[in-house]
Length: 138
Image (cartoon, rainbow, N blue to C red; front, side):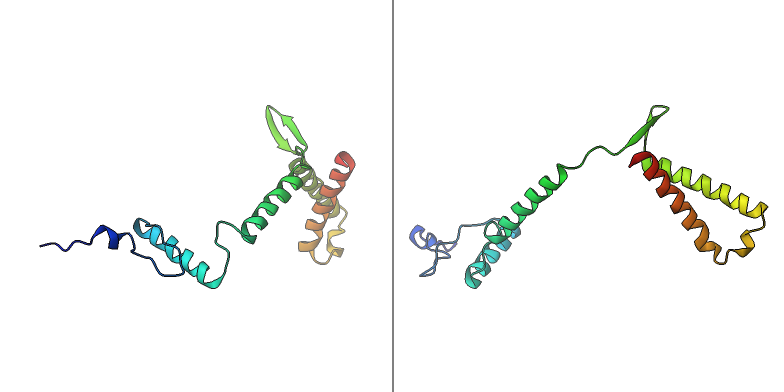
């Protein structure tokens, strides 16, 4: 024999004096939502769907959109139907010029005078790369 609860008692399930009735939730996710709602309600914290958190999120989105309006297309070259960024071309030019500089230093026997070679050649590469960028794209 099954025990049934009358409709009048069933409508008061979850009711406590001084608190609104909780809406019935289904499943584990609904139970988590109900617990979070009760926690925020007890602590006086704004619920996740409103309050300062959503206002800050909206302000962040607006700021990102305003900052993105100044972006333009990056300088690029069409080489054999493929677009290459200009910084890649400047980097390749920097590598080639650094290798040519090394060959010149080897022929003149001046490479022996350079002390930390592991720093000299990357610095030469960066110097040639940035100089190429400034000469052609500034």
